[in-house]
Image: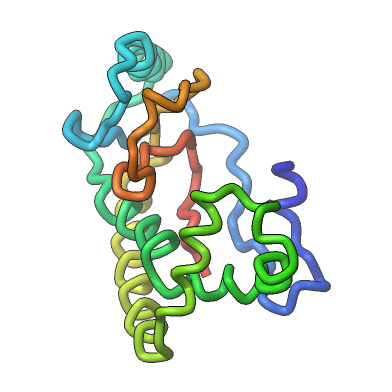
Amino acid sequence: MFGVVAGFDPADPLARMSKAAAVSSFGQHFRFGVPPRADLEFFGDQEAARLFGAAVGILEKIGGTPIATSFAPFREAGRLLYDGPWVAERLHATEALLRDDPEAMLSVTRSIIENGSGYSSLDAYRAQYELAALRRAIDNIFASIDLLLLPLQARFMRSPRLPRNRCASTPISAAIPISSTCST
C-alpha cells in the first residue's frame, strides 16, 4: 500500500513528484519530536500509553533527545481534510458512487463526503491559505527535529469504545515521518 501511495502516478493530473530525500541514518545523536501529554489520546488504553512511553525511552537509549513538539498544526491540517473544502474534492471523486450505490460506502464516510457540497470557491481559497500557513509551521517544526514520534492505535477498538462523533475526536495517527509530509 505504501508503495502505491508514495509513488508518482503520471495518470493523476494532481500528482507531484516527491522532493523528500531518504535518510539512511541519523548518526549517534538525533532529535525527535514528542507531542505534549495533553495532545496525546489513547482512548483509555493504558497499555498503549505505556507502550508509547517505552518507545520514547528506547529512542532516548539509542541517542535520541526528545523535543516537546506542538501537534496543533498537524491536527489543524487534518481538520481541514475532514471539516473543510477538501471534502468537496472527495465528493467530486466519489460522485458517481454516491449517486449509483450510496450504500457501498460506510455511513460515517458518506456523511463526511456529502458535506462537500456546502463549500464555496471562497472557502477553498481561504483553506488554501490556511494550509499554506500550517505547512510553514510544520516545516519549522521539522527544521528542529529529525523525526516526529506519534502513538499508534494498534488494537482494534470495538464500536462502543469509539467516540460517537469520530471527526470531532480524531486520534493521533501512527507515524514517524522523517520529513515534512506537507512539502510542496
